[in-house]
Image (cartoon, rainbow, N blue to C red; front, top):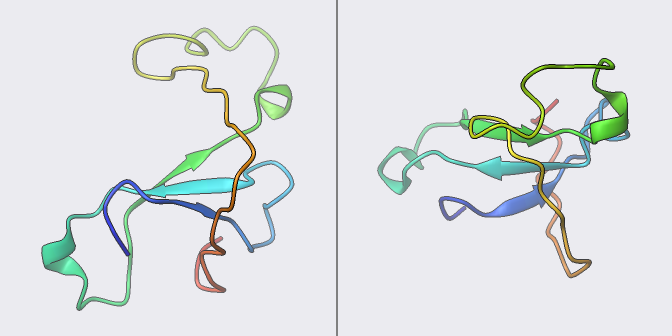
Length: 75
């Protein structure tokens, strides 16, 4: 899996976190665990969350396109 690839979340939280971004460097591909950033749907965040839309928590718009499934090991 390439760094910064976006994958569908097939885990139990897929309704609120439909996608994850792999941020782990390729040099660690031999390990079974992955470092990911969850892409959370904005409506499921608590109202008046102060960090939504800031530099550290940007609001992103996704264009519908083919996105691979990330597999059963992610939440």
